[in-house]
Length: 291
View (tube, rainbow, N blue to C red):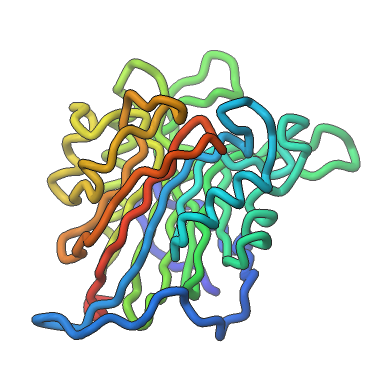
């Protein structure tokens, strides 16, 4: 897999080497070929998003097998993950959660760190935290883009470009679909999220073909800072229900959005306490044209 050479100024960090193909390239996708549409054939694609809380459930107990079971139950073709630890610390047993989940689910994975810190000890692995994409379909390319962030790892941070906005291009039976996963700033002040939305839209504008943007937006779809998204994308699960907190959700902050031309045939939020968020899953139909 080769990284692509293009991007606006804030979309530069290419981490294709992190991509791990857990399945053989010839593995069959989980979905069947779609019937021809009015203008071009379409193919089905089930996409999910899940903030996995570093593998800890609503009960604060770390259990990556429970996380994997919740993901498996979604029966999704592509899953965007947030709050993924890779050798981060004791809270997740220093596990490489991205690779471990991919192996448990027999899926490919691309991990895009937000933070990449020195090891906890001299013989340890680098401590990383970020987002990831799991895919049953072949991955043609992957990039870790920069967007504006306010670091949680440095004293007196100021907004600055930082990585952790993941993009993969998946081959869905001939349709080359751009799938992005994000984790936006959690603070009450919306200014950083506003900048992040602008940065993400800049990345999307440089790509052609069908696009699916998922993630933990830390804001509901009606929030003013998310308004620019709806000029370019559509909320794929407006009636799917709340996602946070997992036990009794009062907010829908985990979103799946799609570009024009992608048809949504189903959407739901799944009740599980494997994290402090609930996952969202959508069934889509994507045209084969427009690579």
